[in-house]
Image (cartoon, rainbow, N blue to C red; front, side, top):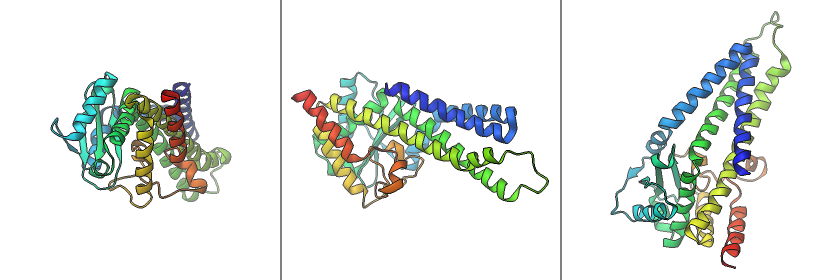
Length: 283
């Protein structure tokens, strides 16, 4: 059901983008947006992982590193190819997975999370990330983020065009369509992006808890990371990559309308679901 929901929301994003193209340029504009969407997907498929790893100054580690050994254990348990493993040189605890497919994946964790969590909690975090790899969540969320970003950019262009580009003689446009492009389209795109991201996070929590057979260890890890994230922003973090991290690196911005645009479900709800999963698995 979650996969069907994700596919439907991604289709809706593409339709919004093509509708904006139609407002600007009719059928030709719609086809142009379709070509841009295809180009974005191509770039995301081949290059998004290397870009993200460079942004966070991630350093690859080998089999001698404790992080590598934990990932290798979980990859074997999940019957997944061994991903590349990276350490991020910051004390802020967080972790993420990236890559276009299970055979071209990378798992990264900060030095801070390795110091903060015990062995079971760290295994829970990595099980969560390996679940993202298994279900190709990173490719999905990256493509969705690209769609939402382009829609927001087009809305900004439409706003400036409305302010400076319309003369008294210009009566060919549809003001309602323009208003929808400026206000409704980027709002809808952002809400769809967040809905997809939250759905995949819940799925990864559930699958990760089952993979490590210790949902409570993952719950404890989420609580610790979330608490830290309210005081420190992860260096290199951006709104474009926040969806990758196990805890939103901007978790300090919370409450009110801001919670609608969070890339992650509330940590309290994630912990409650993990506790329910532990009761299901262990009685």
